[in-house]
Each structure stands twice: as structure tokens, then as C-alpha cells.
Length: 133
Image (cartoon, rainbow, N blue to C red):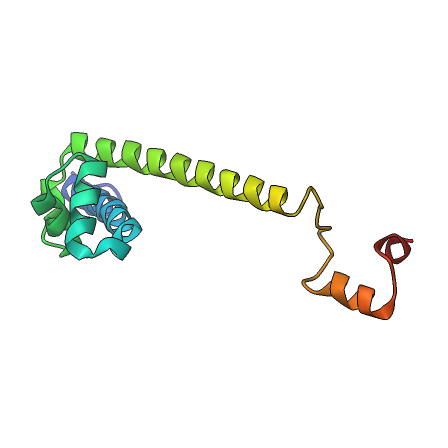
């Protein structure tokens, strides 16, 4: 039975296609994260990260996976791996930001301070305290 011209088969096919697209996006992002090591090494690292075989990574990479071949456990594992990778990237970015702040000697940068503005003020003989006043 259809409602508004939408059959259950079409809904299932669309959902399967959406899951395949999401899974492919996650796998491709995992490969890209390791791409600087070379493609073969990137496949290996992505497989380890996602908990699947290198062959399966290659299937996703080359768009050889059919929409009905994405297992529920696989998409859930991919989502969890993506979250873990994002948490790692966030921690690395926060660490890098802390290192940059430490290298600056605790000097803060005002939000409206454009690159080079301090140097231009110094060249004009304007101290930072005078510029704020």
C-alpha cells in the first residue's frame, strides 16, 4: 500500500542509500586523514581505525559497496570511530593552541587585532595601552 505515492520499498531503498553514503563518507575521511603516508598505508590505518579489513576499505573507497551490503554493526562502528577521531583531533587542536599561547608568553590577542596591527602601531610609536584608550 502506498501513501502519497511513497511505497515502503522506496523508503527502504532510500534509507539504504543514505546509510551507504554516510558509511562511504566516514571511510573516505579516515583514509584522507592518513593519506600523507601513501594510499596503501592509508588503507591499512583506516581499516585499523574502523575495525574492518583493508579490502573493505578499498571497496568503500572505490564505491564498490552496494546499498544493501552495509551492515548495521558496520555503520555503528564507523560512527563510533568517527566520534573517537574527532575527539582526538579536538584534543590535539587544544594542545596546539595551549602550546602557541605558551610560546607567546601569555600575551593574548584581541579579537579585533588584525594581523600586523601591533607592528604597525609600534612603527608609528603608539603603545598598545594608548591604542586601547
